[in-house]
Amino acid sequence: MRKQISGIFSLYFFFLIFSAGAALADEVILENGDKLTGTIVKVDGGKLTLKTDYAGSVEIQMEKIKSLVTDQPAEIKLESGEVLKGKLKTLGEGKLAVEPSPGREAATVDWKKVVAVNPPPRKLTGNFTLGGTSQSGNTDRASASIGADASIKSDNDRFSLRFLLNYAQEKGAETANNTYLSLKYDYFFTKKFYGLLALELLKDRFVDLNLRTIVGPGVGYQIWDDPVKFLLFEAGVTYFSEDHINNPHKDWTAARLAGNFRYKLFKTITFADQIEIYPNLNYGGEYTLRNEASLISPLGAAWSLKLSNIWRRDSDPAPGIQNDDLAWILGLQYSF
Image (cartoon, rainbow, N blue to C red; front, side, top):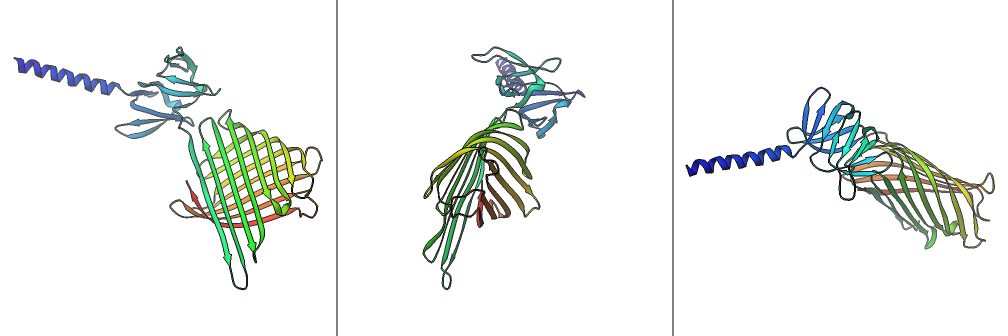
């Protein structure tokens, strides 16, 4: 008798564990009546990703979903930028209920205003580039360049950094020595439209620049952002300052017009171009420009061969300085 009772309790206990495990799952019901269970990984780009034990990760078009219920708290981001966290449950008429959490009451939101569920964490991407040449004998010449391009992006914002150091000498005398740094912070009001704050620094004694400083706010619009193509346009107003080595200091207000483009032409070639134009708002017709165009060819793993052309133009340079500077850089790039 005791063995029978013990067996019954064991079976009952196993049933409870199994039932609890089965219940610990998010539930999605489609318009056609199909019921899917698993874990909601994210909602992005009009698609819900559900991780299941029986079919791996499944992408579902949002318009095909009739209702959903989450068993565990989920984080949702609204169009306004507000973030809510709690268990989710769809209600009638396109409404979504978010359970209460510490310090916050239960909330009901319009499902159409939800731009992301469980948005991915900040992601760091970028590359380092090293280039250089060395010649001896009849020609005594050496050059080196170090570059970096990195960005940290979340669902809300993006921080970008660009750095380039160029040095060259011929017969023991310097022929190039310049350092460029660009920092930019973007805050996305929508998936494509964002506000920004940009800082650009340039030091180059061969164009009589102890330090050029450009800083100011602006707005941008992101058209593409995927592994094949990237395109954005930006506009703003900046404070432009030039601390010269041999000439008086100058500063003025300038507009900022910028574009960033990348396209994978073939499996072996990617073309990229970044341009910034600064029209002088104090003196019409004057401007400065920086354009960096590159061809990138993968070598294997994370390594690539990169050929860049950097064109800098100043419509009103210091006395004795030419308007244009051109540089060609061939380097080895490592991406992460």
